[in-house]
Image 1: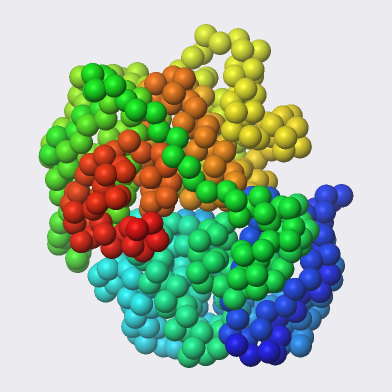
Image 2: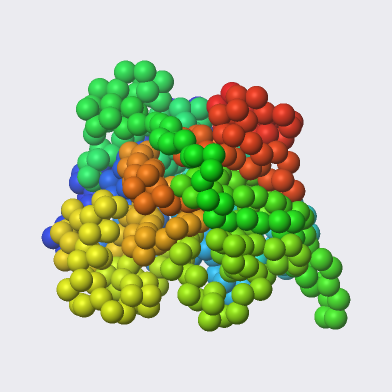
Length: 530
C-alpha cells in the first residue's frame, strides 16, 4: 500500500437546511488501500461517500475534497463528469434504482466505455460481456442483452459492479456493494477487487454494515455515529480493542437464535408440490428458448414455523417465493394455503386471500411508491382490506406499527407519516416495507432478503421484532436470504437451492452442523460459519 494520499477529506460538513447530517468529517485514502466506513443506518456514511462525487442534491457542503491534490468542491459540472466513472467509480446501494430500466445492461456498461475510453460500439459490447463474466454472472453472452428487471437482485448488483469497474478507476466507492450477493459470489467479487488493486493500484472505500466483510477484507475502518466520525484506525486495532463506546456496541451485535419449537401437530398452512417455473427467453425475432428458473420444488410450511430458503443469486429462491404468493405463474405443480389452491384460484378469491399472506421485497426503494407518503404506504392495505375502520382507528394502527418497527423517533411520528421514501436511509425504508406488510397481521409472510439493507444493530431489532410477532400471533415465514447467519438465527428448517434445483433440506441446526451436499458445505464455508 502506497503512503501517498489519493483522496483527502478535510472537515467535510453536509447540511440539509438547518439539519447537519455530516459534521466536520476528516479522513484520507491512500492508493491501493481499502478503507471501510461503518455505522448504523442514518449515521451519514452514504452521504459522505456521495459527497465525494458531488451527488448530494439540495445540500450545502463545506470543507475540502482533495483528489490527486485537486479540490473537487471547486470543480465545474463538466469537470466532475470526467471524474465520475472515469477516475472515481461508484457502486450504489440499490441497483434497481441506479440502473436505467429502459436500457439493456450491456448497453449501460458499453455507454461508460464509449464515453470515457472512446471505444467503438462492437469493442465496448465485447468488453461488457467480459466484465459481466468477471463479476460472476452466468451466460454473460445472453444476459448482456437482458433488461435490469430480467435479472435477479444479486445479478443486478453484479451488473452495476461491472459498470463501475469498466474504466478501471483510481478510486472505487462501494456503497453496500455485496448487500444483494450470496456468500460465494461475494467472495468472488472481493477477490476480483483485490486483483484489480494489484493491477492498477486502485483504492477502495467501502460503505457497509457487514462487519464480517470489514474484518476480513479492509485495511482500515472509520466508524460514524449521527454524522460524526467517532473512531478510525487499522481494522485489526479497531476490532481487537475498540476505544469508543459506540464502536464497542456495534461490534458486540451478532444475530442470535430466537427460534421457538413448533408442535409436531401444528397445522400445515402452505404446501407446494412439484412446482416448476420456466420462462421463454427470446433468441431472435420469432424464436425463443426455455429458461427453467425452478425445476422441481416441494415444500411444506406449518403455522408458526419459519422455512429458510438459501442459495446463490439466480438459484430460483425468489421466483419460488413469488409463486407461493401466487404472484408468479407456474409451469407445473400446485400451491395451496389452508387447503385452498392458489395457483389456479379465481381473481376474486385470490384477492380475498391477500390479507392472509404478505411480502417484504428485497429492494425497499423500488417497492415503495415515491408518490405516496409513509402514512399512505403503510395504511394502504388497511384501506383496502379493512375499510370499515374509522379514520382515528386507521391512523392509530399505522402509528402503532411504525413504533413497533422503530421509526417513531425519526423526527417524531408526525414527521414520519408525512415524509416520502426518498427522505429515509436504506435501512429505514426497509422498516417501512416491513410495517406495510405486518400491519394486516397476516398468517404467512414471505421475507425476501428483509435485513439485507440493515446495519447489524437494526438487523437485530428487526429479527427480534419478527420473532416476537411470530410467537404472539403464530405467524409463518418463508425467509429468503443469502445471509446464512440470519437464517441460522431465524429458521426452523432450511432449504438449499442451486440453479433451480432443491439440493438439500432439513432442520436448520442439523443441516448447518452436518451438511450432506458439497454445494451446501461450500456455502457454509464461504459464510465462515463452519
